[in-house]
Image (tube, rainbow, N blue to C red; front, side):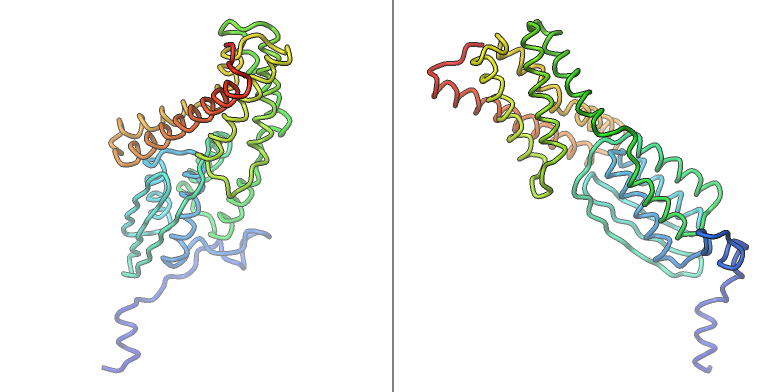
Length: 290
């Protein structure tokens, strides 16, 4: 049999491109809703990585990627995700396959951005969009800022000061906690990328402990423990622990265990930072009155 006939037998003729190609699509939306296995899996992987980056649970990431692949005509897709890694393999009806692995280094909780990615994935599954248009939508979502940055500082002021007052602190304790909360937020918003979460937790808690003792020493507050209670509320990983328990209850034991260990280690680093600050102050000043 001639070589050209062998190729035709292995790879069937590709059907005609749907109406949403470069000739009929509106400006800025040029492209086809179809694509090869690598292109489809690349877009699905970008959506899944952004979901995981914004704090979504692994079950949502796996389900979303599987549905997106199916919407673009995949015959089979296998997705596995943990909090720091996504692996996926895609098989098309013509037998072509593609596989991808994506490392997700940093995750945080961004519910506003997460909601927009969920809306995008639902629209893709309802009506598949051209792949370049999906990538453009993802880039716009990455730039999304639900609230101005100054509002984060205002929230930190009210949160730390309010918790210090709630747990029995004086008005001056609340003012001191609010000031420290503002500085911790400034440190968080402008930290260097080379500093990981564990090191940042230790550094910020150490700084908060020192500032709490310093505020009491200068007369801006009277209870170190109440000030620390107010400032620690900005750093305690309560939501991470809740997400870990949710993953384990949903059957994602590996993911839940990893999240729980990460949350416990972060809490340990926070405790060590505050303990180191109080120990240093006790050594320098001969004792810390709490």
